[in-house]
View (cartoon, rainbow, N blue to C red):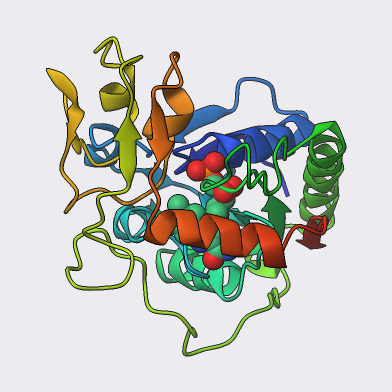
Length: 274
Ligand SMILES: Cc1cc2nc3c(=O)[nH]c(=O)nc-3n(C[C@H](O)[C@H](O)[C@H](O)COP(=O)(O)O)c2cc1C
């Protein structure tokens, strides 16, 4: 079948998912693929309509074995008209559990025809100098594999006459999904409503961290003022600080960072389903 355009949609607070979906797009050979980065609140205000001549590549990180609630909310507004779609999850070397299957389910319900799926590894959001889980991932080897995956998707599409002929795709995972959705606004759950970010005197109040926050939890006039109830613990602010002024305090997120590093430091490799 003929593809007119490749469209990328991704939620990527610390940019590993963005790197992976761009790598896959490169492999498809479509220059100037359109990108919709739904990480920031303003971008999630716009919706997207796609047709059966588009190829949609959708990437999200894995949060507690699921797709992030914010990405899920936006994806439920997608209007896809029989659009071939690639499901991509990026996880921090622990596990992707049911996230890939969940992404496939959400996209199918919105009118997509899942053509392929993949789980890549990205530097863990909670990684620190002392707990460097999957640091540097995706690396050059991962991105090379992403490009080959992109080429194989195109070959698969070339072998069919229309989106209706795309064979059913079987992705790993179980239903009902094992973990509860990681919802930022859900109070009283283990992860949320945490005060986990330390801000040192190196903070210059440049405001970069606030601009990149996916939920607008950082006061634009005071980078130290973080709304801990809306914070989704994505660590974008820590990663984006040019002065390295933000770090993870001792507590629940630090404990998770140490646990992941002690149990899941052995290198995992990307998995593809074409
Ligand atoms: C709240 C939260 C939950 C996470 N849960 C998992 C998980 O269940 N399994 C895993 O391997 N990584 C997990 N991670 C790590 C991210 O999936 C990983 O670092 C990913 O590369 C981040 O993507 P991004 O760079 O696009 O933001 C979690 C990260 C956060 C912030």
